[in-house]
Length: 285
Ligand code: AMP
Ligand code: MN
Ligand code: MN
Ligand code: MN
Image (cartoon, rainbow, N blue to C red; front, side):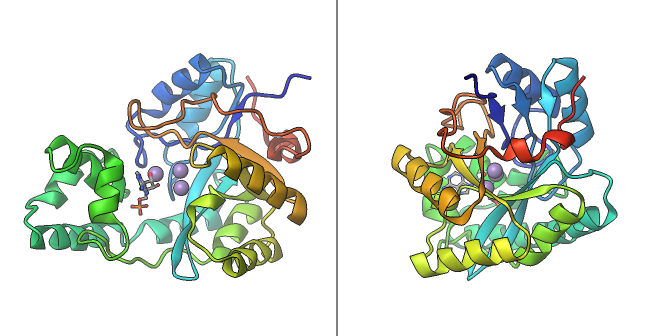
C-alpha cells in the first residue's frame, strides 16, 4: 500500500529557515511531498502563503507551528498541526512566546562580546526575515559566514548551548498552555524530535504523561533529528503510550539541513499516522 508522503515539520524565513514559504512549497513538491505543513517557530505569519502555494502546486496542506516550551529545565518543542489559524487564544499565546526574543538576543550578543565576538546582534539581525523571531540559528549563520566556525553545529556546540558564552536561559511557554492553545484551536499537538532532549527516562516519562494529560496526542517518530535506532525506539514509545506518529524533515535551509523535504523513510506500518486523525483538517485545492 502506498503511504502518503507527508512532511509535517519545516521552517521558512518567517522563523529560522532561509527559504520563503513559496520556495519551500516548491521544494516540497519537487521532493515528492504529497501532504505538507510549514511549522515556523512560535509564529503563524507564513501560514496563508504556505497554504496558497501548496494548493497551487497540488499539495495537500495542514496548518502548523512549533511552540517553544520550558519543561524540567530544558527547552522542548511541541508541534501543532491542523488548527484554525485565526484562533485568537492560539495567536495571543504565540505572541507571548515570541516576546522577549529580542532582549534575549541582546544578552546573547553581550555574552559573545565578552569572548571577543563583536557586533553579533547587528550581525544576526542581517539574517532575520521576521524581526519578531530572532533565534539562535541566525547567530549561528552569522558566525559561520564571518569564519568564526565552519558550520552551524559547531557554533551551537561552542557558543550557543548550556554554559557556553552566547547561551542565555529563557522562559518559554508552559507545556499545558502550548498543548491547550493547539487543541483549543482544533489541532493536534505533537512532541517534536523526542530524542533531542537530554532527559532521564523518569523525566521523559513525566513529559509524555503530562503531555497526554493536557490533551497531547502525537509524537514525532520519523524526523531529521533521529538516528535509525531512535526512529525504532520512538516508534515503540508511540505504541506504548497510544500516541499518533508523525513524520517531518525539520528542513531549515539548503546545505544546512541533513534531510531533504519528503525524503525520510515511511512510518513503520504498525503505527497510526497523525494525519489519519487530521483528515477533516487537511486542505486541498
Ligand atoms: P531558539 O528558538 O532561538 O532557541 O533556536 C533554536 C533553533 O536552533 C532550533 O529550532 C534549531 O533550528 C537550531 N538548533 C538547535 N540546536 C542546534 C544544533 N545543535 N545545531 C544546529 N542547529 C541547532
Ligand atoms: Mn529551528
Ligand atoms: Mn525543534
Ligand atoms: Mn523545527
